[in-house]
Amino acid sequence: MIMLIGVTSSLGKAIAEQLLVAGIPFRGACRNRTKAKSLTDRDVDVVQIDLDNRSGLADALAGSTKVISCVHGLLGGSRASIERIDIQGQRSLIDAAAEAGVARFVFISALGASAQHPSDFWRAKACTEQHLKASGLEYVILRPSAFMDLYAHDLIGAAVLRRKPVIVLGSGKMARNLIA
Image 1: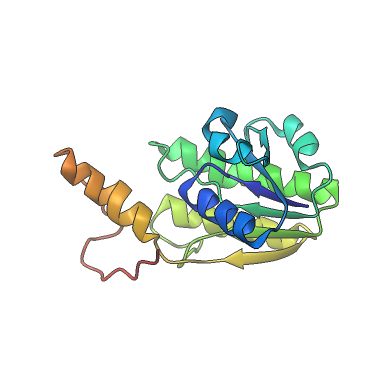
Image 2: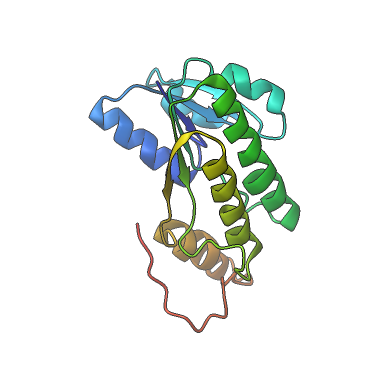
């Protein structure tokens, strides 16, 4: 059984929809189960987890053979959210998956993730990649470029529409290769 972590995120919803369309059974996990009503209404089993509370992860992962983790703290509003979710939370999730006997762990990272990257987020992704590689789990690391839906709308467009400051990742001088 696949466990999709972050099932209520933009990426998690898109992955869930593809799994449903393909008829591939999965369980979902998120921090706030009420936000997953569109999935529970379609008979998807969704469990509530908190990556800050490692004790609940073992129960959530019970019976899972594969994990897809697409949670992140980029929009959490503080450096602490990246540390808490992208480093500590992912580390707890990877460790719990290894202890639960998960066969394969799929980690959604970021294009350009590196320990030397100037951004906390990309450094955190690189840190988690290293932890996953050392975990003993069979793994897949996906490094997509910025998601157009998130970057163009949530980080830029929505702020412009509200006449608020815009978040630009990087210097603002580099071309972006966005994907949908």
